[in-house]
Amino acid sequence: MSKITDAREAVMVGRRSDGTLVRRPLSPHLQAYDMLQMTSALSITHRITGVLWSIGLVFLVWWLVATASGEASYNGAMWFFGSFIGVIGLLGLTAVAWYHTLNGIRHLYWDSGHGYDMPTTYLTGRAVLIGTAALTALTWLIMLITWI
View 1 (cartoon, rainbow, N blue to C red):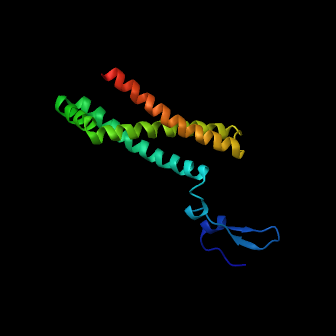
View 2: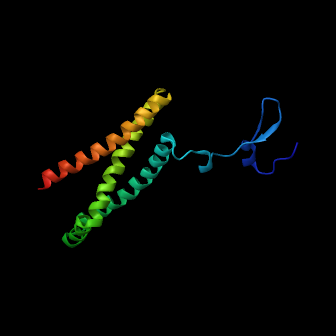
View 3: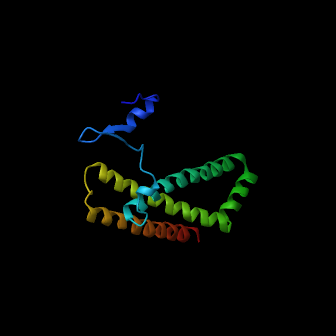
């Protein structure tokens, strides 16, 4: 048997049921996933929306700092958020927030030990997508009604 020189390699070595050694990958890479499968697409999208939601919080901090810094800073931030790019960004962040929240609830449902069968997985996946679209539209409809 070969000597392991790096301690991290110890977790990569395993044995098959017949006793032969096998090297396990650390984690599956993108080649292991079928991107057209709903479960893989929603999982990857959940990770992406988590990153985008974190970036969106930077804009929230910018707005809060601008609010506390005075009228000129606040007007500059509001000019950006009121511009076409700002409105598209806020619309996207709204969708990101709803998607990440609804898919997080789906993950909590899985953590309780339920919903692992494929029909339920696809049903909850579709519910997340439809809920994201509906709640984003409802949020912006309420926002526009109260703004006008």
